[in-house]
View 1: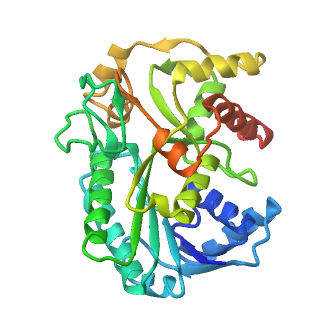
View 2: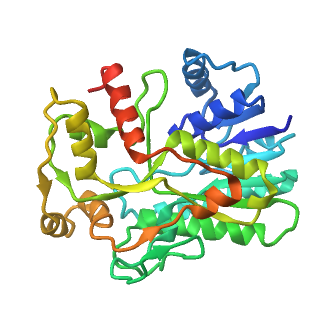
Length: 332
């Protein structure tokens, strides 16, 4: 059985990817920024009944080249799911060189080690048309214009990270590359732990009105499966894959939760688009939301379905599973 390196082992997507690889019998190594963090990963997986005897750890950080050569020893495949998060400031210009150097550190070590294939988590930020683009459908051939006035520096960092990956792979002929382009990564985590997208559901379940934000929903469990399918199948080599199940607005999520939990104070009130647009001029978080309002195009995940046999669950199931997870674990 092949040996797989998953980057950023403490992350939301990484956790599910590690779990699914171990359940399939793979030897898995994952990177953590300090060995102390390995205990959190192991305990979380074991609390879910996952056998961790084939799991090992390496210390490496995206911001430094140190540790990556050791992490790549005897590795056949790399699932590069770690990436710097935008934090509270999606306009921080430092996000761009940080994202670029992270790819350079991981890919340089992987290529030196002769890794067969890298499957990289990119983002639909690298596949984002102008809001006024009349094209009704977007496929994997589309790349975001860096001068698109709607996007943030966080989104630009995603574009540059993926561009850098393809450029590096194009300069050699041994290591293959696949990129996965998710939108909003939603879904339950494990062992009662919170994920980076729980706040959406927490707001709704506590009665916050919804902006008319359109989420390209991808369930974290399905996304982990897609990375593994892309790793296992030669047909994926050299390809990009859109990784969303379907679009759903925040008000639609609110209505689903209102019906499922009538005793909770879920609000179906919608914040008008113009309010978000005005606030976006002064507040970066509102600018982020504004990129997800009034979109006219639709993405198509046919390629992942037909070429790799990917079968993601419906967005409604993701919404209900996530809400129930938060309630069962007393997070809300």
